[in-house]
Image (cartoon, rainbow, N blue to C red; front, side):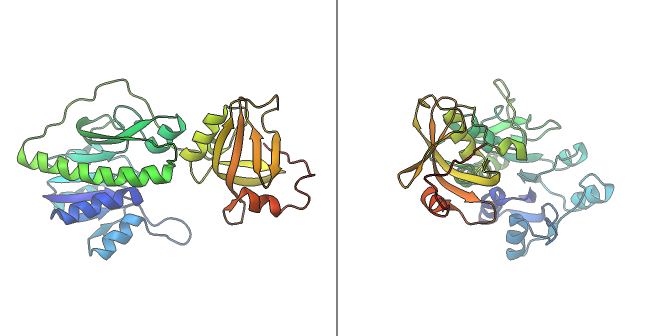
Length: 305
């Protein structure tokens, strides 16, 4: 099959690798422009370069010139995995077999930009990957296949992303094979939709008046981005655990313990054990290393919030 591939982050890598391994012709790889002042290339660009594939990095995919270029590749299908931009109608209708998307949720649940993070934050026990035929809506297209997987209590956004990327790559090849052989057709989505908006910076700040389990889910879901302030210093919280379903009458944000045997902070309904953290400008460290670096850690009062 002649394919144009759209993708940007590491989540896209297993799918592009799987297409190459399966023998599909990748006419071109479309990825977002290099990011930041240092012009850092996307993971997809790096793989495409290593595989000697044609790379296109348009600032806009809605220009007549870009559409004409895509038309020139005469793709049978386009494959989209976490590209990061919404495809215009003209592009969606260009390939005879359509644009096939690999989405990291059990659609219609968690449509949108951050399905993996939002599922963990919400405390879901199960998620999955859906392949679908894209339409003009946001993840509203007809579904080809769904593959489910459990969300482990130890999963973070990073570990779950890695696992779902591998599942998605296998599901993509299965989908393309079914389409080629005429044994697979897309069916309308069934169920009540939910949405997964992008993660904003404010979403990552820990609110200690929330339940302890919700805070742990936030830490896992936005890993490694959850943060709080301790004595006005911004601290990332990388790992935490609920150790008590009662906060012992403490106010949310109170530091209940801070010694070599534990660093405990009160939430609304329990105590949270801080296991790994990262002060701004420093490396990740255990709570023991953090506390040992503070003079008179036992005696001083830490203000959290």
